[in-house]
Length: 310
Image 1: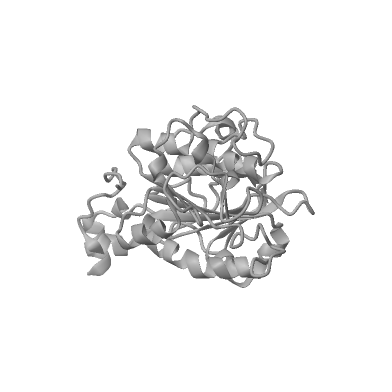
Image 2 (image 1 turned 120 degrees about the horizontal axis):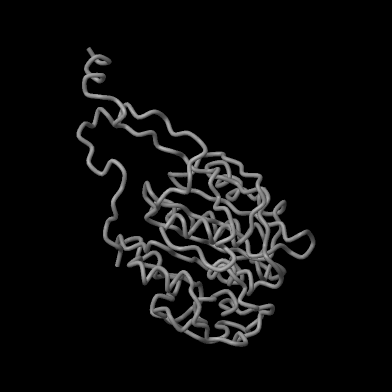
């Protein structure tokens, strides 16, 4: 269930006219407090390959592009932990089950539950909520669902019923129950992990994004953000990946050239949801140069409004 409404600036607006007089939003705002964050993670492609794909390019044009975004390491699994925990927790392989798991450490699932926020992870080809198999519909390396892309399954302090089949996302959107934090994990064809398989190429992945991201963006409302990122590059570059922020609070066409990584994204999510940052994310400066800053509408007095409109 969605959290109860939290206090917002200008919660009571006495005059619709005052809203109309708000000065256009400007750059340079701190990370805003958001109601919804959706994180979509794609796989194993470098920055300059994916950013020119048609749908992704259109998302960049309407959102904000982080031009110096980097994965933490190789292979995939530790990068997912970096996003979910702000740390790799020493995970260095795609092994399943992860050595040393299950873990008791702080993570986004536990942090949300403790704060009264809702969260869900939606994974394609996960057949049942809370499934713990290393793979479904194939082996643990290239199966359509692989647990190496689902770090939440390795923690003792989360409600595993929130780990859902992907179809539940459409149901939650239709029912108006989009959680405060959602991680969306396409299967290993749609995320281009299996890019040498026919139908799983980079253009095919972009087509999946074109078909699936618009309903998510529409469901965010005026106070949410969608983060599209890649876990790592294809080992042909310097782990340079694409990360895009999109939503009503993001400056359209913004470009951030500061160097960031998954820990920076984790820190930014924490700030947006009012959660304490975790592990290595504590040391990061959140991404704060892509947001629109609303100007206070109540700076004008009613007398000033009368004078203006006489």
